[in-house]
Image 1: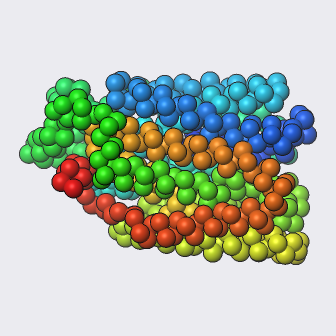
Image 2 (image 1 turned 90 degrees about the horizontal axis):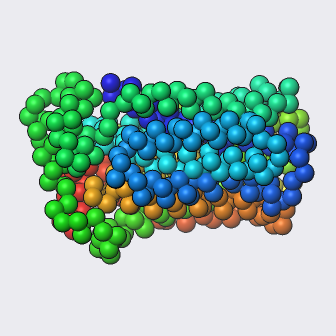
Image 3 (image 1 turned 30 degrees about the horizontal axis):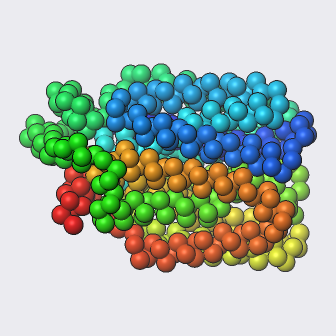
Length: 442
């Protein structure tokens, strides 16, 4: 049951990935049919993270009141509606509006699904279970790239953009049958239901262990409503954790990952790789590597720990982006293959570290009474930075050139290397309640 629930919740990551990645193949076809300016191209591409800002705000206001499961139901309905609207779009701005709806769905699910996974998984495998969300994002991106390639021959961008309707319906069907988070149930006064969920998800758990988990959750319940107040983030320890998670997402996005995923065919064309089919095949290769290395990260994160992987990822991303920037500066079409190697190397380091770890840290570090608020702020920082990077890239590339743009991304990763070395905490193998207690004692 735990595996089934993990796969179901992680399916929202799949939808995240497909809707984020599909535009890379659809954009060249859309530009043949509709007139884009640099601004409208950037906003249409960035409409998903723009909409996610509002979805994250909605999740912040509603997730603790109504629970994790109802919010995931709402998200899946938005996914289905947005996918149908995108496939039926009749112009640039109707397509942009549809992608804003999809973005709102992603904003809700990207906050609630990792929270649900973290609250339902045992501590010993929580890192791998929560990382399954990031894995499914990469699987969704790969699926989008393959769908883009398959429909590129017919030129049907509508089928590309409508593909997400199928997994959206699967998510809706599955989450309607799924249980609520046991931790939310305890806080809602439904202790009997929480015990039943724990025994269902972990059939080998002993009654004594169930009692211990429920008692720990009860102990973490705020005795005073003031404990759930925003003012608690004035506490130096909580303020540090919030700043850390916000900065982690800022650095994740300003590594340039979503520029590469959203504009990969155009980047490869600028580097000297010719032909849309060849560009999409290379892009699909990037997506496949992203999936494979994310699986590797899931196997390593609970063995090596969060902190070593974070440091390793920023170091490798800095070197890879520096290579890409140098190759663009040289501007030799004969080096197109080397640019592709640089992109593959960057995706490797991102997928093993920078991709999954901010989501995992976000779901682990905040105490239960403030988890919804803390995760919402961290998630908002992700989407604001995501939108800014994707929206600004066409203008930056046109004004500064690709070499300088990738140099800026490399410098952000250099800062991330120092940041992770100085501040990244280690939470491997520690229960959420123990993390809460350690925060309370500092």
